[in-house]
Amino acid sequence: MAQPSDERYLGAGMTGVHMTTDQVLADGDVQLSHDLVARALDQWQSERPDLDVSPQGVIGRVQRLSARLSDEIAAEHAHHGLDDDEYDVLTTLRRTGEPYEMTSGELARLAVVTTVEMDRRIDRLAETGLVTRTGDALVALTLTGRSVADEAFTAHVANEHRLIGPLSPSERADLERLLARWIEALEGPDHVSR
Image (tube, rainbow, N blue to C red):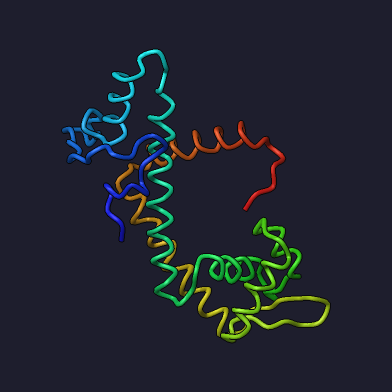
């Protein structure tokens, strides 16, 4: 697993900043002056005082967090012999309820990929016996596929609890509300996404 100082976890213009240990204050807040992104902001402020680089404080941290979460989630899926795309197909079929089937076109639309790409994913899962193709272009979970989906999803939710564990329930609610507001502002209320 990559370490927090790995450049993959740095936002644009943030590489080359040396990681220092964050200082945790008595109330649990992280002192941002020792945060990697804050150090980069300080450096940019010194080099380019003519620019307001404050958005990098949020966006740089969101990028670092996104990369870190993606790696942690992918590692959990790998424990179940799945990549992220395969996990997505299995759990999408599982959450639809009985009879756990959809057309490949519906799956592609939900995953925001082409039908050709979705067919590749389905073929990989069919080769391992986790899904079957039925008439009318339907894709269905097998009993084994349902079992793997349930095991993987249970572990995925436990992993998400671990990952969000450092935040209090009120911090989680605030963050969820703010992220939902930000996404809606960028995508619009009618945007169809994963």
